[in-house]
Length: 387
Ligand code: BGC
Image (cartoon, rainbow, N blue to C red):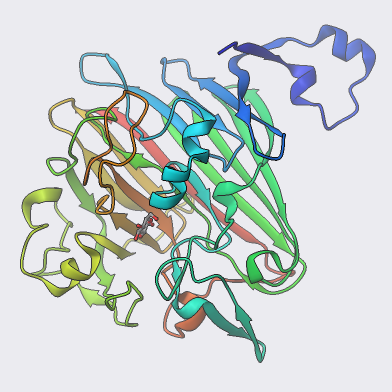
C-alpha cells in the first residue's frame, strides 16, 4: 500500500483554496491516505491512517465508514490491533462476508438494530422496509450505511486529528421517508480517545438510530476468545427480547440475572447459564438501559472493557440512552481476518451505543424520530488506557 501525506489543500478540497494559500499548504503529519480498493461500480475506496501523539493508530475507509484497524498499547507499550476486520477492500466485498454479515467496524444506519416485521407507522402512513434478519429489519436494510461510499474530509488540529464522513441518503432509500444528510466525525485525540460525533438532518420525519459496529478483542484481533474479558455496563435494566430478538417492551432489572454487569465481570462467567434470554440471543445480544444522567459534556458512562492479560482497557461514554452488548455469537470461523486467523465463535464483541431496538414500534421507549426542526445529534467517546 502506498501511503501519501495529506496536504492542507486536499483537506480543504471542497472549499475554494486561494492559490497563494494552496502553495503554502502544509502537510498534515497525523493523517495519511492510500487507495484501499475498487468497488464493483468502479469507484475507489480510500483508506485513511490517523495517528495521535502517543502512537495510537487508526485506519478508516470511506467505504461504510469502516474502522479497519485500531492499534493501542498493552501495559508494556506494545501496540496491538484490537478490532476485527480485513486487510483489503475485497475482504469486505466478498460473498462469504455478505453471507455472514457481521458488519465489522462499520457505521450503521439509518436504523441500527432491529425493527419488528420490517414495518413502522408514522403520521398514519405505513412504511415497509427490507426484512433482512429473519422476519425483521436489521441495521438499515439490504444496503445500509455500512455498504455505501462516504465522502471523506480529513482534518488535523491541536490535540486531535481525524476524518469527517458525509453521506446523503435519498428520500425513500431502503424504504425510509425523507432525504437524510448524515455527517459522522471520527476524532482521535491526544488523550487517547476516539470521539465519534453523529449528525443528521432530514427533509421529513424519519426514524434514525446511528451507531458504530466495531468488534473488540483487547488481546489483539485474531485471538480466539473474548470470554475472559472483564465487562462492566452501567445499567440497572435491560430490554428483554422475544425469540427473534425484538424487545418485549419491558425494561427488566438486571439484579440477580446473568445480565448484571454493574460490577466488572468476566463475559464467560454466566454466558452458558440456563436462561431464556441467553437462549434467544445464543449468548449476549441485548440492549442495556444506561442508568447514569449525562454529565456536563452530555455523556453518560456506558461501559468499561478490560483484558487483564494485556492490561488494555476501553471505557465508553455516550449521549445515547442504551448500549447493545453483542458477544459475537454468530461468528463461526468462516471469515479469516487481518492476522490470518479465523474469526471463531465469540472471538470479538460489539458494544453499540444506540437508542433501543424497535423504538418506532415501542411507545414506552425514548423516541428515535428525527424531524426537519429537530436534527439528529449523538456523541460517543471511547477512551483507551492500561491497567
Ligand atoms: C446484532 C446481532 C447481529 C450483529 C451482526 C448486532 O448488532 O445485535 O444480532 O448478529 O449485529 O449483524
